[in-house]
Length: 141
Length: 235
Image 1 (cartoon, rainbow over the protein chains, first blue to last red):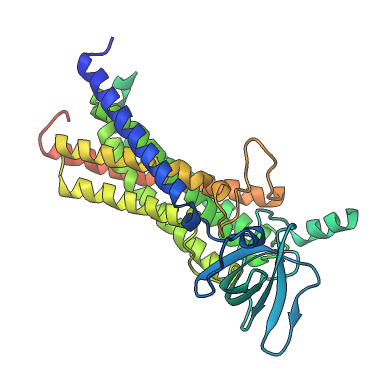
Image 2 (tube, each protein chain N blue to C red; image 1 turned 60 degrees about the vertical axis):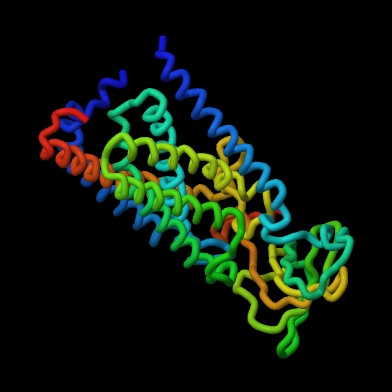
C-alpha cells in the first residue's frame, strides 16, 4: 500500500527513535544516584561509607514533637517511618516547614544519624484543600 | 482525509476563526481569573500562593501537549512527506515555548515562598527546562535553515528526539525522589485537589488552550500569507 521509500523511512526513524530512547534510559539508569534530588534516612543507614565533606540532601517527614528551637539553632528528626536522622540547622526555615510535613535538608553528615544542615527546603505534597475541609477531615479522624 | 489539511482550504477557516476564539478566550479567562483570584478558597497550608497553581499547571500541560502534537506530526512529515503538517508544526512552536517559560517562571515564584528556594535541580524541573531548550532549538532551526526540505527534516528530527523527554517529564516525579510534588490530578486514581479548586483550574486550562490556539492561528496565517506573497500556490 505504501511505497518502498516510505517503509524504509519508517524503519529508519523507528530505529533512531528506539536507539535514542534506549540510550537515554541507560544513561538515566546509571546516573540514578545523581538524578534523585534527595535520599532517605534508610539509604543513609545503608551507605557503605560516609563522606563528611560531601554535601548531600536528605528528605523525609519531620517527626512529630521533635522540633526544638533555641535562639539561633533548630533541631529536629527526619523520618521515613523506618529510620531516622537527627538534623541541626541555624537560620530561617521556610514557612511551610512544620511537624509531620515533608522536608529536604541539605548539608554534611557527621555520622549515619547526624546531619549538619546548611539549607532547609520544605516539601509540599500533592494535596490541595481549603482550611475548612482540612479541619473537618481532622475532626472525623 | 489528510487532504483536508491543505493550506488553501484551511486558510478560509483560519482567517475567520481568530475573532471568535478571541471572544471565547476573553469570556473564559475573565470568569477563570475571578474564580482563581477571588472566589476559590485559599489552601490549608500554603494559603494564597495556591493561586499560582492556576497559571502554572495549565501552562505546563499546554506546553507538554503542544510539543507532543509537534512531534507526532513530525513523524508524518518525515515518513509520508506530508507537506500540510509542516506549517502546522512550525506555527505551534512559539506558543508552546511561551507556555513553557510561563510554567518555569510561575513555578519559581511559587517555589520561593513554599519550598524556600527559587530553583532546584530536581528531575521534574530540569526535564522541563530541557523541554524549553528543545523548543528553542526547534525554533532556531527554522530560522537558520529557512524553508525547504532541509529545514523540514532537521526540525522534525529535533521534535522527534525531544519526544523522548516528554514521558520523562510526566513520570519524573514517580521515578525519582524530587522536590516537586507528584501529580494531583490523576485519570486512573483519586484526585487530591479539592473540587472547589478544580473549577478555576479547569477554566484557566480552557482559557490558556484557547489562547494557544489563537496564537497558533495567527502564526499559521502569517506563514500562509508569506507563501502566497512568494507567488507559490502550493508548498
